[in-house]
Length: 234
Image 1 (cartoon, rainbow, N blue to C red):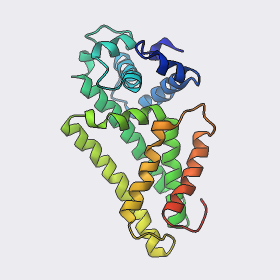
Image 2 (spheres, helix red, strand yellow):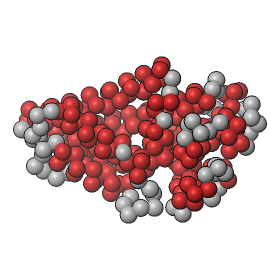
Image 3 (cartoon, rainbow, N blue to C red):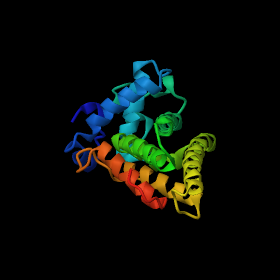
């Protein structure tokens, strides 16, 4: 396993991830995501801090990680974090915002994909977002698990992202009910159930498992249609 993403306090967790190269994949994928989504994080040291913090939060949790731990993982001086970020909480916020912005991109791609009706639109949307949650499962896990560690201001900002996600899915389901494609008496509750199913991928999905992210996406699209009461397959 690469030393760049190792937390020495959690050997058992490391061993489990090392078997599938989870941390190496996370480093490469999140590095690419950082390059695309966080263009304002230009100093290499700041990127290293974000990646190190992601690994530390994933293995030790936000509360169990110190700024010194993050700096050590990034191979920087203990004071380096404060050159680029005001606090450990700001580092978590940047990671959380990255995850939520990435999810927003997935929702937008799913909604923009060609569809012949609400059923196909819901399938496209869920396929896109569940594939993303599976592919970036470590990022998704940290964002979800540590949401309540954010400051009230930062939590409120992330809550707005989530409210928009629910509104988008609810609108698709409402359109499907109106068209006779879906059968549900609670569009908002159905949307919440579908999104929760997708978000939970960050908790259990592992890249060395039975199914690829794309296969997961297809399965979850089918699950979503069933939850919405559709009679067609994705």
